[in-house]
Length: 601
Image (cartoon, rainbow, N blue to C red; front, top):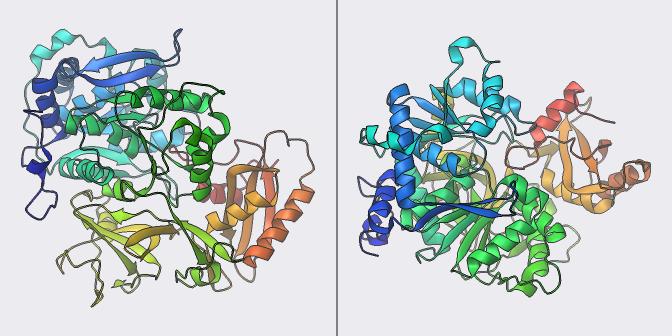
């Protein structure tokens, strides 16, 4: 469409991504306002009110008014570079709050209202770390926010601005701001899977590059492609889902995470409704596909059409069982075998690293468990007794380089060998907020030795810096596989073991284990590290004697992995710590176990 950004503007002669100097999400929003102003930009489906799924919409023109109004109010309370935290429920106010903070030259800090259960410590950590001058919230949760902020030291308490109390008329007071494409757009706080959350400095350049990489990799160039997401907006993928419309002038529909969890079928119904109007892209982690296959299947005869849906699954490592269960459940409703796209991404790279081709099906490779333990990816038959399933994450994004490295020696490893994944490209962020030493260590890695043949670093200058992801993986046949995280890797008697592999064995060993809710880790012991397994009880097993299940788990872990479990315990459903993105908090669980704080009833 005339006036909207064209992909050719953002590519160099070799097809690499090169953003125009003035291309930021804010400038792209302004282009959308000028050229498709009356079209819907964002839609929110409200399941908390009297009308199930009532749609609330913002056109591009309406969004522009709200951004200027809120931006003008922020300009009265902040100076350029101040942090502005968003502590609001999922909804259109969150979207306007985030973009208004970016528009007026401050640094947005997308967080969550204190009403999110179990994550008060993470919120407190992020606020103390980012020291925002202003907190944006809504009238509905203002009191809760005030109460939470009152517990912080007086010198750290920010001014509170209520988004939905700022009138549109305030827009006249907004003063336009020039945005530096290499300046910081927002701080993305990590989920806290392996350590306390830290703020990743996401620049305007890395945001734009990341979104273009995703659009090209998923083939979203058709402007009739829409986004639909229930992922929280303080999560990097949730934010990306509200970034797509800014780039190509489409729209995104949002649902609250709570609405999805309570009734997964809402996700399916919304996808069906959206796919009738064009292609629709959505994203979710492993557990969401498992949960929806169990509880979200429509009633027989339901008018559901998923033929136009593309679904990103981004938990690493991706679980093929979740994909298979979802495909089987929804194939009768038109879901294509190529719909689900296993992908890999991390906050330090804004998000996106790799995904499978648009016309490819999710595929699995079975590897020798013994060889995995010594750092080799050796394929075996799918029915091999020691076979471990590994899902391909496809090809690395355009204008991004990923190498597999022996991190101790900083040497590139050949295909088929496991090492740490290092990244270099325009979507890599500017480091950690307030942590120069850690930024230098993680973002300033130097590759000392490259492969003379088959190097994946050939496009990168020798003196370039690389991002250490902390993730382990390998290449095979041109595709990237993610095997786990270095910090989670368990070393027992000189051999490496992946916790998720052990956890899968635990889940299959007994029906008393709640699917997807078991963690494995090691703790120091007299002779060598000892394996500990903690599992939540499945529904309806609260009064069952756990002894037979514990024995079955010990036996299965010994048979499959050759490991002796030093301690196996069951806890009630909901007792295992999880991150705000839904991942199991293995590190947090280990810390609670060692301190005795974990509820071990």
